[in-house]
Length: 277
Image 1 (spheres, rainbow, N blue to C red):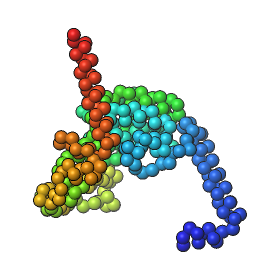
Image 2: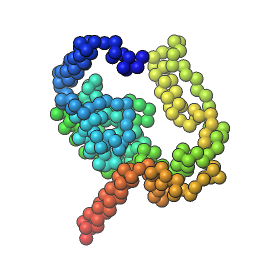
Image 3: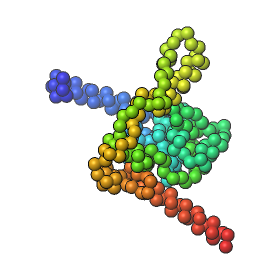
Image 4: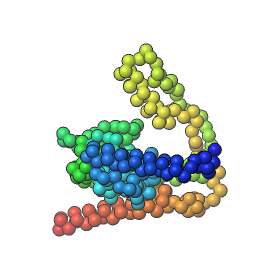
């Protein structure tokens, strides 16, 4: 049944009633959010599972609750890419990033975040979360305070740029499929009733690590330069990417953020030189 068939079976009164019901539900949701102490839900907000970093930065109000926006913008200005943030279902407000996307300096800063109101946990494999136990204006202020402790870093590999080999294999089909010498099979015992809760939790974690590693792949892609049909520079340009030395930036957006990092480095160097004079 298509949309026209469906609405064709309803009277005008029934259609109006359904829309009124939706409006009432929306109003109830807003009331519930307010009762929990959150800042008002802006009309642009539309929760999604995932979205490119560039789109999120251009339209933060569409993807992020008000409490988390200032802290996220602080992190973005330092080339820290956010993976996920809390929503109105959570207690407190937090931000999630990929561990490997942080510089060593920022990993250390994360490890040293402390305080009775500070939240630190891991929600997805390879990620870390930090936040505070508050919502509303206090939550927004305290989350921003945490974000300000992090330092400027270069853009993260894989999320912002890739190697030439990775580009040729994954974007230009310049590869051969070969057996993976490091492959091994790990049975999924998640639902084995003989296991204790602790054993299940341990195995689930082990299984997820395996599933997200190269060891779970029976075959791997091996670079084959003979399959290149055009010069590398032309292939990169056709994908609207940017080649710079050994890096291929996924878009101008990521490349410009890298340039901001280089400018910041130069500014810091100039400050040090002025102080030493």
